Image (cartoon, rainbow, N blue to C red; front, side, top):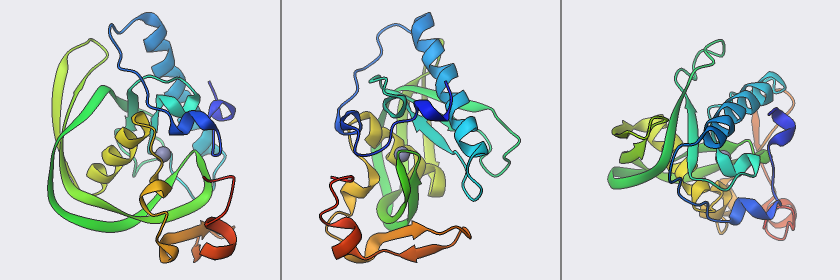
Length: 190
Ligand SMILES: [Zn+2]
């Protein structure tokens, strides 16, 4: 897979719930490899952004699979961790608003409220269960990606918040969007 396999809004699959993976077959492993390749290829085409994570629905495969970069501060590290059937078992900490973007929502960024700490349960590519306790940015990524497996996009959390929408400019800076004009009734988003 490559960046052209990544679907973007208003593709209807992005608002559909993905199905759980039963057995981790070769087909599932191929999807995971394809997701990683598509994320790296997408990043190579974007000057100011990092491909931090991807859910299978974003390559139009409706399975509960998420891949997350092991080192998103270092673009040359192309290794990922795979979470199959990821589930949040506990929300903790406080709710924090911060910027989020998405490979399936072109150029739009949002200030999204998320819990600062979550506990996650998932299985790995060998079918073995593991648990993660995540804080800060990783907790935010995991909530964003698990939302994808349930048919939710980050903008769905802020749809009634005019001040929460931003656009990525050519120079890599964010500027506030006009909610009434660009967002509220935009049929490409909702
Ligand atoms: Zn996303």
